[in-house]
Image 1: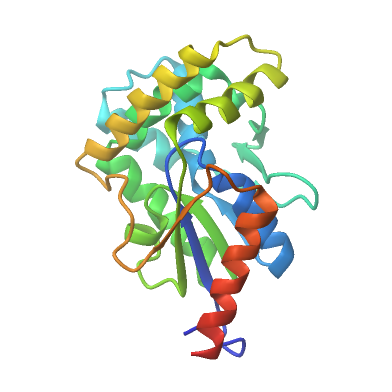
Image 2: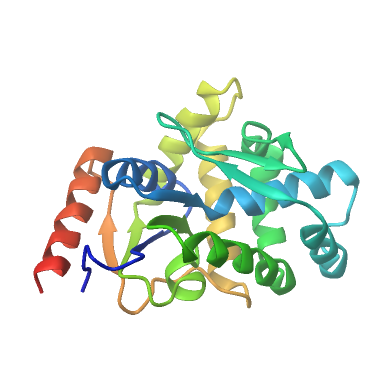
Amino acid sequence: MIKKEELVIQITIDGPAGAGKSTIAKKLADKLRFLYIDTGAMYRAITYTALQQGIPLDDEAALAKLTTSVNLDMVQQKEAKPKIYCNDLDLTLAIREPLVSRHVSQVAAHGLVRQELVKLQRKLAQKNNVVMDGRDAGTVVLPNADCKIFLTASLKERARRRCLELNAGGHRHTLEMVKADLARRDTYDQNRKASPLIPATDAVIIDTTFLTPAEVVQKILDLIKEKESD
């Protein structure tokens, strides 16, 4: 049950790439006036930094050392996704580059890296009402969250959305290229040993294939109201 008088309310939104997690989580957080935590951006920031420093992405110990040595910070924005900084360097746009997207699943599969970032994610959620999105927000990071959502969509639709996003950013990708990349990431994320991509047992699964972001947000708001009245 979600009670408004509780000190902290935690809502998690998990799902594969292209399902609409970040868009929905941001809009929901704005509606509720909650803190939005984009866990995926943290893994992307580590991936980008590792690539810049020439750290082998299969070297778990080196990546874990990097994760503990950098200062990650997220700054909320009213009309956009949070800005993410690594050692005071704004990486908000850089972490969305295709090169980072291709390698972030490999970095995120390392248990030691996840261990360190989960500590930070939980710390951010301790003193704030939050909407947290990711791939293990409801299963690992906040297993006792008040409301857990798992978003999904057809591979074709997810690829269409991601292709539009990439091309709008000046990149040139075909639908088939993006579809193949997402399929590869799905396989990697679902089969990794550390926090695989699976719905929490108590998560509500929402297929967003034929829904607008506004419709998905409304569905979640309705679920929250139901929990409040239980």
